[in-house]
Image 1: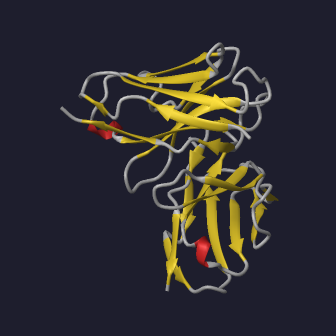
Image 2: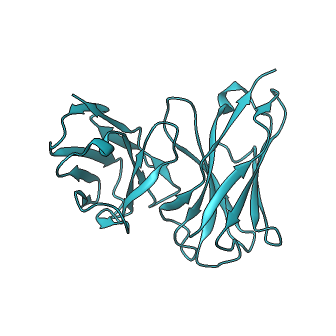
Length: 106
Length: 123
């Protein structure tokens, strides 16, 4: 099975900061990666698919990059509503999610 | 727009079978463009894909759960269902249903998701 790691597991940031989260796959997955945002008590919300394609309606401050084994999610200018947990998911083989990165207020 | 809603018992006894249903509105489970999945999340932990079904009845399950999982579809009711047998406390989680984006390849991202339903396994 393909294993997914995320780093960091948590981070503290301030509104306006640029935030980068990394997702690494245990083997090459081309661009078969999605990113989700989850707030407490809510279902995950799709942000990005195919590693870098922004889902309709998602603010342009979110961006994704990478291919193969290493991927990043970047929030260019953190807003108050962005404090949440972020998960990556590979779909090269049966779906596997990363362990999550919690972004909280510094 | 498509909406998904999970329903079913919130409490299941150990060794029994967990049964949940996902009702789809604003779209059809018979659409060949999509497929339909179950995903779960224990409290404070990450997400685990359970399995999917396509409108034709074709299924695929997480190898770690395959021996205990059955997913079925009822196109007449626009619903799909999950059964997980021989449950233990480790199966306590929020269970989500979600739509898979690409019904032809059936390897894709998930959007939208249902709101989730908490199932507790306890005697």
